[in-house]
Image 1 (cartoon, rainbow, N blue to C red):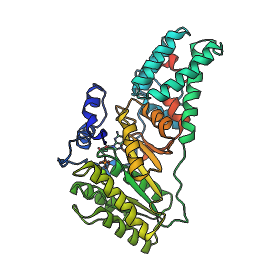
Image 2 (spheres, rainbow, N blue to C red; image 1 turned 180 degrees about the vertical axis):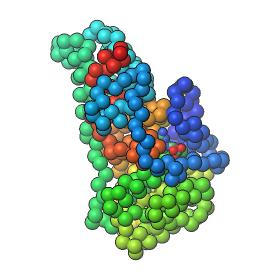
Image 3 (tube, protein in one colour; image 1 turned 90 degrees about the vertical axis):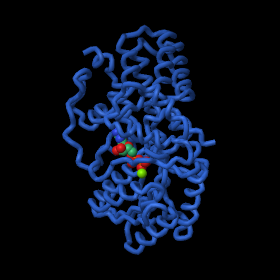
Image 4 (cartoon, protein in one colour; image 1 turned 45 degrees about the vertical axis):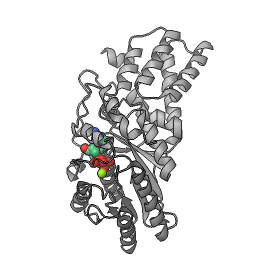
Length: 381
Ligand SMILES: Nc1nc2c(ncn2[C@@H]2O[C@H](COP(=O)(O)OP(=O)(O)O)[C@@H](O)[C@H]2O)c(=O)[nH]1
Ligand SMILES: [Mg+2]
């Protein structure tokens, strides 16, 4: 049970030399997957500083000029995802102008697996392409690439279900869950900003009472943005903090309450028990709360993300996913593995550390960024 807590170190070591843009991330992961009973010794420094407006977009990377600068949104997804293994390996495979044959499919299969797409999704994709190739549906490798792009979008389309705040549920309670370091607190800050901008009244609950710094991180964010944060300091009972926060948000007639939770406790089953307790306690005030349980997954985690989703889903129920850090050393493919394996809505993806980098999930833009149509051309230029 709960194997994912301990697997990370091995995964990290298989992922050398890819800059994450944030050296803290890897240490954070080490915490997340630390053995039981060793409290986190440090905390993520992410605070309001992470919520600064996005700087002017950098020019397309010099080694891979953006072939389609006229589409600002797509261009931005492309910039963020250009460093992924998915983009590099599958891109370079097609850039070599390969022959349309079984060897190409073998290479493609290896590349998809290497990009974290996972066995199930990879097999489905490659089998479909093989069938169609054998039926002579493709004139050349470029035609197969076009079919692959369409298959990838089709795989993701069912899970592209944005989160809608139901005004009938007031406050609409969002419980953020996930292992340590995945980006829960940062994402809460980004979401609070997003909901505020949309005109919602927002409150936050500092339910990660396991780490003092986690409470501070949320409070700092709330203070700088004028969002009330209900906290009781570290060591407090998480369920009671969130219960208080719901009462307070209700009395203030706020629209949305976002509750932070711990990513690890002294024991792994303790964490799941705590989350179950939060659920029970919230139900005393509002039988339907939480209205959304958002599981945050670190996109650099690889296939371990599948284990995490399975465990959290079984233990407390999950209604939506946020996949963070796809901008860093993520291989890019884990989103496909999650979509194929669970079909859970992917509400948002994190493409960086600023507030604007939390995007609603758009399969076409995502696939276009990982695997541009004219990738052969752009890789050669
Ligand atoms: N590059 C990148 N870093 C992120 C993203 N989301 C979160 N982070 C970083 O991940 C680290 C851990 O985040 P935090 O919110 O504290 O994780 P938590 O333990 O789950 O609450 C921080 O350094 C964040 O800035 C993202 O989408 N991209
Ligand atoms: Mg946190």
